[in-house]
Image (cartoon, rainbow, N blue to C red):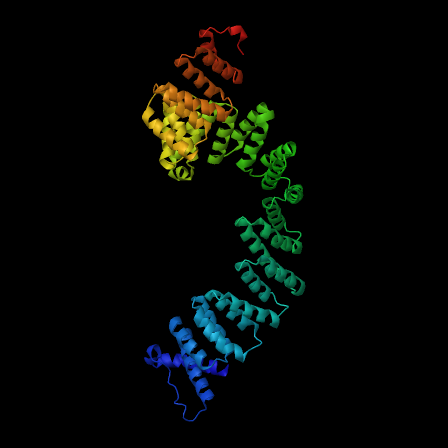
Length: 516
């Protein structure tokens, strides 16, 4: 220490004297004629160390000081603090072989040093030599079984090498021996989150369980544990965790939304609906909670679903996700004008803000186009479906939708034929696509081809009323009137609200009093 103080005292004098050699030349070294080899090495080490201090403290030349510190360590490998400083520098610059070389020279002089073993293991791990790193960390663990470092470092290695069970055994050993378990708990949380994010809930769960056992009052850990259970298909266990959380924080919308989703998974529809009602009544409800609540109400309580949609519309901020969700739910209720109003809100926001436009998913254009088609706005439907295809040119659903739209309007039949043929290459047994192909054949006057494709479509789709109507029209053009009437009647039976088919049957001589 006196040598360090002496060097620091000399440094200003050297600068004041205008010593130009400080910047460039190496320190003078004795020729060793009057010193033993070890003394000579120490003298050279001290010279480099002095020069390093001058560079680092007085001149602010970090790079120059590091060169001298490294040379000092080479000359005096027994100097513990110097070796640690140099090794840390090497590791910081990702020069792991340099760190290993320094540490291997110093470890024999300090075989009981936990710090040196940890640094050596870290450098070896950085080199990718995991077996040697594990040996160093094992040495650190033997030196200090009551410290957390060895357990955590070895645990990381086991996880990296795909051995989570070995890591868990280390965690259990560490939790039973170490007083300050916080770093081990943090390790468990980090590993659990990594596994969960990677879709491996089975390996995530035991790590998070151990962390939660050490901190049973942590809501954040309880939530993470519940999500692990949910992802691992341990639904009842997940419900238990989120029920406890929701009881403790009844206005927490995230807890209630997750609970509702879990009840849905178990087909406990009433409990799911109750959970989603709590979610939308809580703080900052996620649009998903509204969406799921309305989706549950649509089947049994369409009026309640409409009321919920109206409440959602009044309460939600300018949120694109909410608008799209509401539009899709209105489609399920066959309220196409209301659905279009929501899509138009999104389109208006996109026109006014390019940042919003960049966040909209391509499917928006497909959904919007489909609703325009159902609402009779064919031109808008065509524009939007083309926009979707420009973003997703291989989408069979969009190819079919645009081909069918053109077939209905009797336009671009050749291009429509290309599109639906491409869609059928992706899904050759899709009855809806075969119906489009058959309908294009019909519009082109190929009634035999239309009959072949439509018959197969009906077989695949199970007597869909639209396909049956197309079959009836085709059979009528082929002169098979009796069978055409049977197809139209079956179509009307499947969907009695079809006025156009009712008129066809009456014109064909059917008794309207006997029609469905």
